[in-house]
Length: 344
Image (cartoon, rainbow, N blue to C red; front, side, top):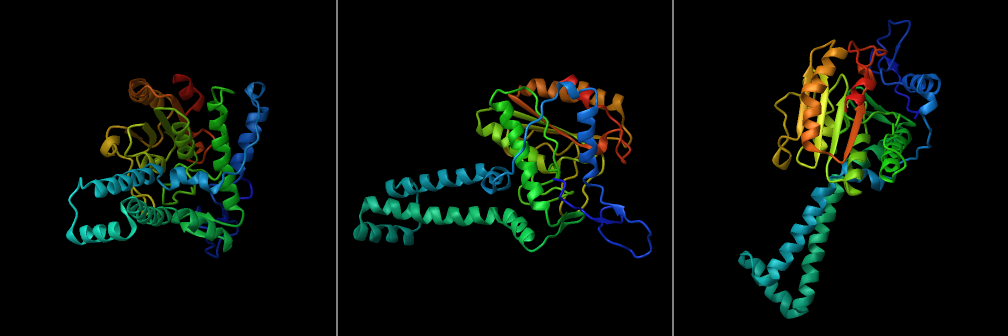
């Protein structure tokens, strides 16, 4: 993960204006990981920590979030149902299709026609699936070509893709550690971060949504409901977008009231973004004034987050802990993450 080099320049631009003696490090750099490892190894909780090795994620694992698996299987179910309906005349179809069906039955038989329609449906599904997976292909290709700027401030450089895979795989390993009954709490210290990465869009220094992948693993492993609590200066838009239309995941985000920042981040993080369809009411945004400290966060947790989580009754809680809202960050928000975890 330390090999993900984000470069230097003016803030996160990666550009040299030509008149600065010292260029700034990109705000998402490896120093914070090194410091966090040092804190965990030398700090007061070090005696209570056991360390586990991470692993790189495999590309097919990424498709659980970055190619909407639920939509894919829904397409399969609809296609199979369509085949049965066509054969049993339970739906009205246009005359040209009736003629085609009659001719196919005459030449290849009624049983084989079902296979024919299923093959056509499978080809269509594969095409849709490939189109959805183009985002991952874009990242893989960018890595092969030596890297590029995926969106504003978000650079995939040599070493970045391997780091992203390791971050995603390590997060999945942390979730599996809990699912397998080896512990009740696991912390994945990873970079690049992930909570801005949407299913088909990189954003805000994030390529793969580590938390989203962990949530989907929990759901696929038998958890009926999962809550995500995102504590960061910036809105966890990627995770929210990934589960915006499901009632199986309650996404909660406490963040600075910053609004949208461009094409890669169309969501504004307002209280009015509540989810859609079955997911309506399962996205809770809590935008906070700049500089909100422990008391403000504690109040929001006590009055809004804790009651919502208790009402939802999740089988698993995933915390997305943004370090830019900590006391050691260059951003102006200071909170005690341990206090917030204790409240839940």
